[in-house]
Length: 353
Image (cartoon, rainbow, N blue to C red):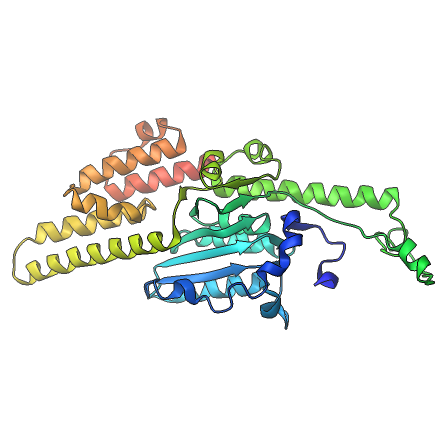
């Protein structure tokens, strides 16, 4: 593990290094939640230190690779029976290499299927970058997110080598080839070069998360790589809702079962030659909610017996508040419900908020 990460800038919660042993074997089978997840949802565990590629002992060390995560998401996207992808995250962060590609991949996949991230319990640094790429981020009352920063360390073991009677002689060509050699004190030039790279990666990370969360880069930088828990994570804009994982799963199962029951009832009525309008309105409500990325409101709207037009008005109001640009509504032509929703989505994308 040390050879893989030595001298590399990392996106990791530094304080978590003291707790790495707690991550080893923490989620070996994932049985604790698999039994309550319905078949239309794919749970992808993102646990322990994050690395670019898988290695032999990753499972034993409690590590997860970006390549492995992407492969699981691709499989879920191609599986027609999967409607929702749940990213179950418990990680202090990890390597820079591969992170941005994975985060962009998840961000682009939002439109294909519902992707939700849950900090269960920690989603720090690189792990939070992954979480922020999902449509929504959930936390529990005690789970944490944040640590949005980059860190790199240089180990100077030259005095230790001397005490052990060991002397290294390095022959190299190219003035920078010997930068960050752990057997020699770091030079001012090497330190300056490393700081520039850390700063560059930090700007990239801040811009990525600002895009994912519809926040300004100044807002992200104002966190100063701090940790935010429960309600505080929502207040700062890094999470969307505080949940209890088991209750969250139960709620989603109940919502889906109720909606399916209503649709089946409507199908039975159509086969009997009656109430076709009722069936079509239920389907339209579901379509509008999915189009607006708010499937969790389906059950509420159906139980209140709201018409598609009423649902459309509520959803438009919510979207307007989310963007904090209510002028969007006045510029959208009064067209079909789908056109209205697509116009709002396009306006949000162009404005970069």
